[in-house]
Length: 351
Image 1 (cartoon, rainbow, N blue to C red):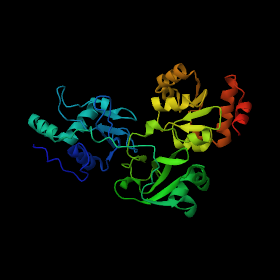
Image 2 (cartoon, one colour):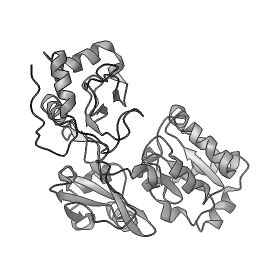
Image 3 (tube, rainbow, N blue to C red):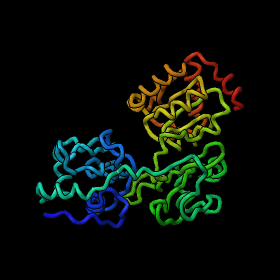
Image 4 (tube, helix red, strand yellow):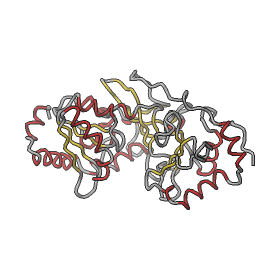
Protein backbone atom coordinates (compact mmCIF):
# COMPACT_ATOMS: atom_id res chain seq x y z
CA UNK A 1 0.00 0.00 0.00
CA UNK A 2 1.43 3.36 -1.00
CA UNK A 3 0.62 6.21 1.39
CA UNK A 4 -1.25 9.14 -0.15
CA UNK A 5 0.42 12.37 -1.04
CA UNK A 6 0.87 14.88 1.75
CA UNK A 7 -2.27 16.88 1.11
CA UNK A 8 -5.00 17.56 3.62
CA UNK A 9 -8.06 19.64 4.29
CA UNK A 10 -5.83 21.37 6.82
CA UNK A 11 -2.57 21.80 4.90
CA UNK A 12 -0.80 23.37 7.87
CA UNK A 13 -0.46 20.11 9.79
CA UNK A 14 2.91 18.39 9.94
CA UNK A 15 1.57 14.91 9.24
CA UNK A 16 -1.46 15.31 6.92
CA UNK A 17 -1.99 11.58 6.45
CA UNK A 18 -2.16 10.84 10.17
CA UNK A 19 -4.32 13.90 10.85
CA UNK A 20 -6.85 12.93 8.16
CA UNK A 21 -6.90 9.23 9.10
CA UNK A 22 -7.56 10.10 12.73
CA UNK A 23 -10.45 12.30 11.64
CA UNK A 24 -11.90 9.56 9.44
CA UNK A 25 -11.52 6.94 12.17
CA UNK A 26 -12.68 8.89 15.22
CA UNK A 27 -14.98 11.46 13.65
CA UNK A 28 -13.21 14.51 15.03
CA UNK A 29 -9.56 15.43 15.50
CA UNK A 30 -7.90 18.64 16.60
CA UNK A 31 -4.34 19.92 16.63
CA UNK A 32 -4.01 20.04 20.38
CA UNK A 33 -0.57 21.55 20.83
CA UNK A 34 1.01 23.10 17.76
CA UNK A 35 4.73 23.24 18.38
CA UNK A 36 4.57 20.63 21.14
CA UNK A 37 4.10 16.90 21.28
CA UNK A 38 3.65 13.88 23.52
CA UNK A 39 6.88 13.36 25.43
CA UNK A 40 10.25 15.10 25.37
CA UNK A 41 11.58 13.38 22.25
CA UNK A 42 10.00 15.64 19.63
CA UNK A 43 9.64 19.07 21.28
CA UNK A 44 9.25 20.82 17.95
CA UNK A 45 6.37 18.67 16.75
CA UNK A 46 2.66 18.82 17.39
CA UNK A 47 -0.02 16.62 18.91
CA UNK A 48 -3.40 15.47 17.57
CA UNK A 49 -6.18 14.74 20.06
CA UNK A 50 -9.26 12.54 19.75
CA UNK A 51 -11.64 10.99 22.25
CA UNK A 52 -10.28 7.65 23.47
CA UNK A 53 -12.50 4.74 22.40
CA UNK A 54 -11.25 2.41 25.14
CA UNK A 55 -12.14 4.18 28.39
CA UNK A 56 -15.36 6.04 27.65
CA UNK A 57 -13.54 9.35 27.24
CA UNK A 58 -15.63 12.13 25.69
CA UNK A 59 -13.22 15.00 26.07
CA UNK A 60 -10.35 14.36 23.65
CA UNK A 61 -7.90 12.77 26.08
CA UNK A 62 -6.13 10.51 23.54
CA UNK A 63 -3.08 12.31 22.13
CA UNK A 64 -0.93 11.25 19.16
CA UNK A 65 2.44 12.79 18.38
CA UNK A 66 2.66 13.78 14.73
CA UNK A 67 5.54 11.28 14.57
CA UNK A 68 3.40 8.31 15.67
CA UNK A 69 3.97 5.62 13.06
CA UNK A 70 6.80 7.52 11.38
CA UNK A 71 9.82 5.20 11.11
CA UNK A 72 13.12 6.14 12.70
CA UNK A 73 16.20 4.21 13.79
CA UNK A 74 14.24 2.79 16.73
CA UNK A 75 11.14 1.75 14.79
CA UNK A 76 7.81 3.44 14.21
CA UNK A 77 7.70 5.76 17.21
CA UNK A 78 4.74 3.76 18.51
CA UNK A 79 5.39 4.96 22.06
CA UNK A 80 4.47 8.54 21.16
CA UNK A 81 0.83 8.23 22.12
CA UNK A 82 -0.95 8.72 25.43
CA UNK A 83 -4.43 8.62 26.91
CA UNK A 84 -4.47 11.18 29.70
CA UNK A 85 -7.49 9.51 31.27
CA UNK A 86 -6.34 5.90 31.77
CA UNK A 87 -3.22 5.49 29.61
CA UNK A 88 -5.12 3.02 27.44
CA UNK A 89 -2.40 2.53 24.75
CA UNK A 90 -0.28 0.74 27.35
CA UNK A 91 -2.61 -2.20 26.82
CA UNK A 92 -1.04 -4.07 23.90
CA UNK A 93 -4.45 -4.98 22.46
CA UNK A 94 -5.42 -1.32 22.29
CA UNK A 95 -2.12 -0.24 20.75
CA UNK A 96 -2.34 -2.94 18.07
CA UNK A 97 -5.94 -2.02 17.33
CA UNK A 98 -4.91 1.60 16.79
CA UNK A 99 -2.05 0.64 14.48
CA UNK A 100 -4.36 -1.48 12.37
CA UNK A 101 -7.00 1.24 12.26
CA UNK A 102 -4.57 3.84 10.92
CA UNK A 103 -1.90 1.87 9.08
CA UNK A 104 -3.53 -1.42 8.09
CA UNK A 105 -1.79 -3.13 5.16
CA UNK A 106 1.26 -0.90 5.15
CA UNK A 107 4.65 -2.38 4.27
CA UNK A 108 8.15 -1.25 5.22
CA UNK A 109 8.60 0.81 2.06
CA UNK A 110 5.25 2.52 2.68
CA UNK A 111 6.46 3.74 6.08
CA UNK A 112 9.76 4.87 4.57
CA UNK A 113 7.90 6.87 1.93
CA UNK A 114 5.60 8.28 4.58
CA UNK A 115 8.54 9.56 6.60
CA UNK A 116 9.63 11.75 3.67
CA UNK A 117 6.19 13.39 3.56
CA UNK A 118 6.17 14.46 7.20
CA UNK A 119 7.24 18.05 7.63
CA UNK A 120 9.68 19.36 10.20
CA UNK A 121 8.01 20.84 13.22
CA UNK A 122 10.64 23.44 13.97
CA UNK A 123 8.73 26.17 12.16
CA UNK A 124 5.27 25.48 13.60
CA UNK A 125 5.61 26.91 17.09
CA UNK A 126 3.03 29.72 17.20
CA UNK A 127 4.32 33.13 18.08
CA UNK A 128 2.54 34.02 21.31
CA UNK A 129 3.23 37.20 23.19
CA UNK A 130 1.52 38.85 26.11
CA UNK A 131 0.08 41.52 23.86
CA UNK A 132 -3.71 42.11 23.92
CA UNK A 133 -5.70 39.90 21.55
CA UNK A 134 -9.25 39.70 20.21
CA UNK A 135 -11.62 36.92 21.18
CA UNK A 136 -12.58 34.45 18.42
CA UNK A 137 -15.64 34.60 16.21
CA UNK A 138 -19.02 36.19 16.88
CA UNK A 139 -19.06 36.91 20.62
CA UNK A 140 -22.34 37.27 22.51
CA UNK A 141 -22.41 38.75 26.05
CA UNK A 142 -24.08 36.41 28.51
CA UNK A 143 -26.22 39.27 29.77
CA UNK A 144 -27.83 39.53 26.33
CA UNK A 145 -28.86 35.87 26.31
CA UNK A 146 -32.07 34.56 27.84
CA UNK A 147 -31.76 32.33 30.95
CA UNK A 148 -32.99 29.35 28.90
CA UNK A 149 -30.27 29.54 26.24
CA UNK A 150 -27.57 26.89 26.31
CA UNK A 151 -24.69 28.93 27.72
CA UNK A 152 -26.77 30.44 30.53
CA UNK A 153 -28.38 27.08 31.29
CA UNK A 154 -25.03 25.32 31.46
CA UNK A 155 -23.78 27.79 34.07
CA UNK A 156 -26.95 27.94 36.15
CA UNK A 157 -27.08 24.14 36.33
CA UNK A 158 -23.66 24.29 37.97
CA UNK A 159 -24.59 27.01 40.42
CA UNK A 160 -22.94 29.95 38.67
CA UNK A 161 -24.45 33.36 37.98
CA UNK A 162 -23.79 34.03 34.28
CA UNK A 163 -24.05 37.81 34.56
CA UNK A 164 -21.66 37.86 37.52
CA UNK A 165 -19.13 35.79 35.56
CA UNK A 166 -19.43 38.21 32.66
CA UNK A 167 -18.87 41.21 34.92
CA UNK A 168 -15.99 39.74 36.96
CA UNK A 169 -14.20 37.55 34.43
CA UNK A 170 -15.43 38.60 30.99
CA UNK A 171 -16.94 35.16 30.29
CA UNK A 172 -18.99 35.19 27.08
CA UNK A 173 -20.39 32.90 24.37
CA UNK A 174 -19.12 32.29 20.83
CA UNK A 175 -22.08 31.88 18.50
CA UNK A 176 -20.06 31.19 15.35
CA UNK A 177 -16.44 31.21 14.23
CA UNK A 178 -14.32 30.64 11.16
CA UNK A 179 -10.66 29.95 10.50
CA UNK A 180 -8.29 29.83 12.20
CA UNK A 181 -10.50 29.10 15.23
CA UNK A 182 -13.44 27.25 13.74
CA UNK A 183 -13.62 25.01 16.82
CA UNK A 184 -14.51 27.95 19.09
CA UNK A 185 -18.17 28.04 18.00
CA UNK A 186 -20.90 27.11 20.49
CA UNK A 187 -18.57 27.37 23.46
CA UNK A 188 -18.17 29.53 26.50
CA UNK A 189 -15.17 31.77 25.88
CA UNK A 190 -13.05 32.49 28.93
CA UNK A 191 -10.61 35.40 28.54
CA UNK A 192 -7.22 34.93 30.20
CA UNK A 193 -6.34 38.32 31.62
CA UNK A 194 -3.14 39.82 32.98
CA UNK A 195 -2.66 43.41 34.07
CA UNK A 196 -6.17 44.15 32.89
CA UNK A 197 -5.70 42.96 29.30
CA UNK A 198 -6.77 39.79 27.53
CA UNK A 199 -3.68 37.87 26.46
CA UNK A 200 -5.22 34.45 25.69
CA UNK A 201 -8.55 32.61 25.84
CA UNK A 202 -10.00 29.21 26.55
CA UNK A 203 -13.20 27.77 25.04
CA UNK A 204 -15.35 25.37 27.08
CA UNK A 205 -17.93 23.11 25.38
CA UNK A 206 -21.46 23.12 26.74
CA UNK A 207 -22.88 19.97 28.31
CA UNK A 208 -21.67 16.42 27.92
CA UNK A 209 -24.58 15.74 25.58
CA UNK A 210 -22.66 17.52 22.83
CA UNK A 211 -20.69 15.41 20.38
CA UNK A 212 -18.50 13.02 22.34
CA UNK A 213 -15.75 13.60 19.79
CA UNK A 214 -15.64 17.30 20.62
CA UNK A 215 -12.92 18.04 23.18
CA UNK A 216 -14.00 19.72 26.40
CA UNK A 217 -11.60 22.62 25.87
CA UNK A 218 -10.54 24.47 22.74
CA UNK A 219 -7.83 27.07 23.24
CA UNK A 220 -5.96 29.86 21.56
CA UNK A 221 -3.00 28.37 19.72
CA UNK A 222 0.45 28.71 21.16
CA UNK A 223 2.50 27.69 24.15
CA UNK A 224 0.76 30.04 26.58
CA UNK A 225 -0.99 27.83 29.15
CA UNK A 226 2.22 27.18 31.07
CA UNK A 227 2.99 30.92 31.09
CA UNK A 228 -0.12 32.26 32.84
CA UNK A 229 -2.10 32.01 36.06
CA UNK A 230 -5.81 32.50 35.55
CA UNK A 231 -7.20 35.03 38.04
CA UNK A 232 -3.86 36.57 38.97
CA UNK A 233 -5.02 40.19 38.74
CA UNK A 234 -7.60 39.82 41.53
CA UNK A 235 -5.31 37.62 43.64
CA UNK A 236 -2.50 40.18 43.80
CA UNK A 237 -4.30 42.14 46.53
CA UNK A 238 -3.95 39.25 48.99
CA UNK A 239 -0.94 38.17 51.07
CA UNK A 240 -1.55 34.52 50.13
CA UNK A 241 -2.85 32.64 47.11
CA UNK A 242 -4.93 29.50 46.56
CA UNK A 243 -3.76 27.45 43.56
CA UNK A 244 -6.35 25.27 41.78
CA UNK A 245 -6.42 23.43 38.46
CA UNK A 246 -9.29 24.93 36.47
CA UNK A 247 -11.16 28.15 35.84
CA UNK A 248 -14.44 26.96 37.38
CA UNK A 249 -12.68 26.49 40.72
CA UNK A 250 -11.50 30.11 40.53
CA UNK A 251 -15.08 31.16 39.82
CA UNK A 252 -16.31 29.23 42.86
CA UNK A 253 -13.70 30.50 45.31
CA UNK A 254 -13.06 33.97 43.94
CA UNK A 255 -9.90 35.89 44.86
CA UNK A 256 -7.23 34.96 45.78
CA UNK A 257 -7.63 31.74 43.79
CA UNK A 258 -5.58 31.26 40.62
CA UNK A 259 -5.68 28.35 38.16
CA UNK A 260 -2.72 26.64 36.51
CA UNK A 261 -5.07 25.36 33.75
CA UNK A 262 -3.84 21.81 34.32
CA UNK A 263 -2.43 19.40 36.89
CA UNK A 264 1.18 20.50 36.54
CA UNK A 265 3.02 23.62 37.63
CA UNK A 266 5.49 25.05 35.12
CA UNK A 267 8.70 26.87 35.98
CA UNK A 268 7.18 30.13 34.72
CA UNK A 269 4.12 29.67 36.92
CA UNK A 270 6.30 28.85 39.90
CA UNK A 271 8.22 32.08 39.32
CA UNK A 272 4.96 34.04 39.21
CA UNK A 273 3.92 32.52 42.53
CA UNK A 274 7.30 32.83 44.22
CA UNK A 275 7.86 36.47 43.31
CA UNK A 276 4.43 37.56 44.58
CA UNK A 277 3.43 35.41 47.54
CA UNK A 278 5.19 33.92 50.56
CA UNK A 279 2.26 31.61 51.33
CA UNK A 280 0.80 29.32 48.66
CA UNK A 281 -2.15 27.05 49.37
CA UNK A 282 -2.55 24.25 46.82
CA UNK A 283 -6.09 22.85 46.64
CA UNK A 284 -5.54 19.70 44.61
CA UNK A 285 -8.39 17.57 43.29
CA UNK A 286 -6.87 14.56 45.10
CA UNK A 287 -3.49 13.43 46.52
CA UNK A 288 -2.37 11.96 43.19
CA UNK A 289 -3.05 15.29 41.48
CA UNK A 290 -0.74 17.07 43.91
CA UNK A 291 1.97 14.43 43.49
CA UNK A 292 2.09 15.16 39.76
CA UNK A 293 3.29 18.69 40.59
CA UNK A 294 5.05 18.01 43.90
CA UNK A 295 8.56 18.47 42.50
CA UNK A 296 7.67 21.87 41.08
CA UNK A 297 6.30 23.01 44.43
CA UNK A 298 9.40 21.68 46.17
CA UNK A 299 11.54 23.86 43.90
CA UNK A 300 9.24 26.78 44.70
CA UNK A 301 9.97 26.29 48.39
CA UNK A 302 13.71 25.91 47.89
CA UNK A 303 14.17 28.79 45.45
CA UNK A 304 11.87 31.39 47.03
CA UNK A 305 11.40 30.18 50.59
CA UNK A 306 7.68 30.04 49.93
CA UNK A 307 5.46 28.22 52.42
CA UNK A 308 3.46 25.64 50.45
CA UNK A 309 0.34 24.17 52.05
CA UNK A 310 -1.25 21.36 49.98
CA UNK A 311 -4.71 19.98 50.77
CA UNK A 312 -7.73 18.35 49.12
CA UNK A 313 -11.35 17.72 49.98
CA UNK A 314 -11.85 14.65 52.18
CA UNK A 315 -14.82 13.63 50.05
CA UNK A 316 -12.84 13.85 46.81
CA UNK A 317 -14.76 16.77 45.32
CA UNK A 318 -12.84 19.46 43.46
CA UNK A 319 -13.24 23.10 44.56
CA UNK A 320 -15.85 23.91 41.90
CA UNK A 321 -18.17 21.26 43.30
CA UNK A 322 -18.46 23.06 46.63
CA UNK A 323 -20.66 26.02 47.43
CA UNK A 324 -18.74 29.29 47.82
CA UNK A 325 -19.21 29.46 51.60
CA UNK A 326 -18.30 25.79 51.99
CA UNK A 327 -15.12 26.27 49.96
CA UNK A 328 -14.07 29.18 52.13
CA UNK A 329 -14.75 27.26 55.31
CA UNK A 330 -12.33 24.59 54.06
CA UNK A 331 -9.69 27.21 53.22
CA UNK A 332 -10.00 28.91 56.62
CA UNK A 333 -9.74 25.57 58.41
CA UNK A 334 -6.58 24.70 56.47
CA UNK A 335 -5.00 28.06 57.30
CA UNK A 336 -5.88 27.90 60.98
CA UNK A 337 -4.85 24.24 61.21
CA UNK A 338 -1.41 25.08 59.81
CA UNK A 339 -0.88 27.85 62.37
CA UNK A 340 -1.82 30.84 60.22
CA UNK A 341 -4.35 33.46 61.29
CA UNK A 342 -6.98 33.18 58.56
CA UNK A 343 -8.99 36.16 59.79
CA UNK A 344 -5.92 38.43 59.75
CA UNK A 345 -4.82 37.24 56.30
CA UNK A 346 -8.25 37.84 54.84
CA UNK A 347 -8.51 41.27 56.45
CA UNK A 348 -5.12 42.19 54.99
CA UNK A 349 -6.37 41.14 51.59
CA UNK A 350 -9.43 43.31 51.83
CA UNK A 351 -11.88 40.39 52.05
